[in-house]
Picture 1: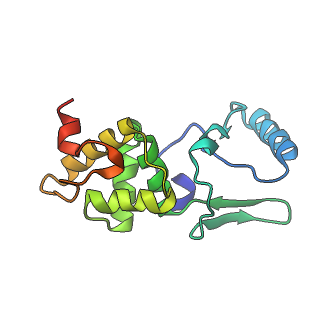
Picture 2 (picture 1 turned 90 degrees about the vertical axis):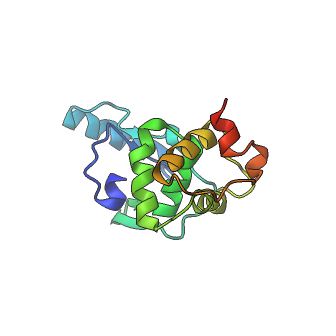
Length: 161
């Protein structure tokens, strides 16, 4: 979020997927950490498991030289990843990305998720959490009513649990 959208949000780490040169990159990460007094885990590879397998054709290069290329995920991919995890701490980011993408309904939000993660529904708890956030943002939205999205109950039924 911070790299791709000039967000003022502070973060403790940078989520990353190292595609090539893992050893030299992690050596450099440790060197930067020592030099700056940061944790060795400031470059977080654990987020890689939540990243889509397909390429992000809308990703922006935010740094590049002969040895290193850093890209920032597109708003579409970031939103899909945050919807997939459905963490309450990401609600502000989800709202920001929805606004950036000019989405206007819960259906559009989940359609975006499905474009990035085809045939791979978000976990039910994530779906429920994001539906609750979207219900608060768009109380009149009925775009998911009567839809058996991902084989889960409708958002109204999930709220009652």
